Amino acid sequence: MFSTNHPQRGFSLTELMIVVAIIGILAAIAIPNFMRYQARAKQSEAKSNLVAIHTGEIAYFAENNSYIDDFNAIGFAVTGSSQRYYYELGNTSSGTLPPGCTASTLDNVSTSGFTAVAIGNIDGDPTCDVWTIDEGKTLVNVINDVSS
Image (tube, rainbow, N blue to C red):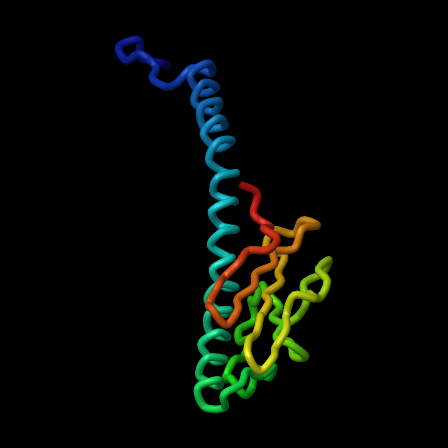
């Protein structure tokens, strides 16, 4: 039935196992790095929204000569269904506080300055990511939820 003129072609089990081992090693190296980069990309949501809050506060200050703790007054609103962060500014907040996170005591608003806070849990561990921005546009990652 089988022709002896054509040798059988294919890979041996040993060759296949070597390829699987190489793929496993590459995945073991690449996946943790990918997860870390993905978490850092998620942090950009907090950064950009805090900069938007800063911009709104600066515009409000230019017109009223004081800062305010009202997101509506500065034109800031959390939109979309995949928000990862909760925002605080004085007596006001926006978004949903992520499970396992607690409200901050870092936020404040006075006539001469403000500090806005973003709180999120971007990787599901017990540590919450906390960012602040102030009237000087100083953006600080108070608690980093991304392992280095």
